[in-house]
Length: 174
Image (cartoon, rainbow, N blue to C red):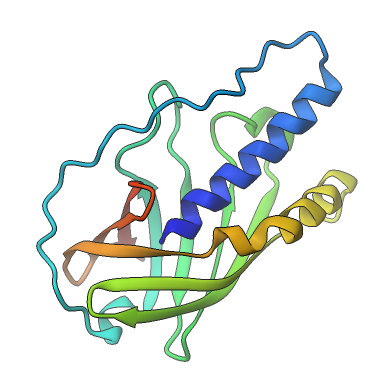
């Protein structure tokens, strides 16, 4: 679960780097704001694999202050332990990247109420130069995007997972 937040952070870092190079006069804060704590209760102690399998849209429940639009990612958990998804950058960086789509793939494993994501890779599916540059950046940092999420809430159509870094994501079944 934590990989979604790291994915967004890595993409944002790439966007900030490109913005800095293209606009030297821009004032960019390199100190990230503090994420508000998620205050929901952990009501789940065990999850069955079948409850995760399927397509979901995620959104942050505790976004950074003044971040504007929250990022949405489409994720599909497959029965073979793999996962795939996609997202378009929203909010900061959207102007630079326009409607560039990023594809996510990796593996997942369930242990009680913990969902571990490993071997996470991100690629721009757009064939332009900026996409190729971002693909190179993502590949060099993809190991850092793996992580574990604790399932706090679970129903047939909704899951709330909280990552190791405190990011709370709501998963809505598609």
